[in-house]
Length: 194
Image (cartoon, rainbow, N blue to C red; front, side, top):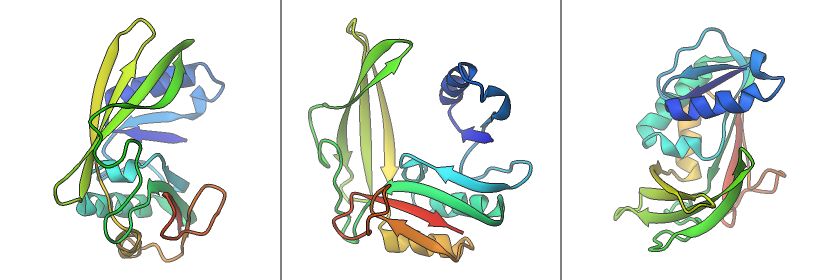
């Protein structure tokens, strides 16, 4: 199993989490860019979770990522990904709405036995092609850490076209992780491509 991330801090956190499991010896963590990776060998599946595809920089970057993924799949292998759904007009539902001045609680995570609140607020680009998602992590002692990422998003027909152009021919999309029909009311797109 191989994990790929462009952020050394995320790889360090993944390594620390793996050390506490029996899986550590079976996982290789690689510092690399999703849009231009070249790993040894091929894989029976490649997973891009948690809207990762939207965080890499727009349609050209997505196309490069999909081409790399296709080149690393074994015959019959599958690419699995999930992204929040964007309709053809650029409409979507996000935590806190498209523009929220105040942070809203998104989740509480436990790290090292300590509960950390994760808050989020968003700012939509004037042309509605990307959104800045700002996170604030709050520890029980009041310490905070802010982080920001830009999500470039694409409507499903554009993503489907990029998948076909990358060489995927068998696409399936669901509206949730339970296989619900994907339609205009879907908040996420769960995609498998072969």
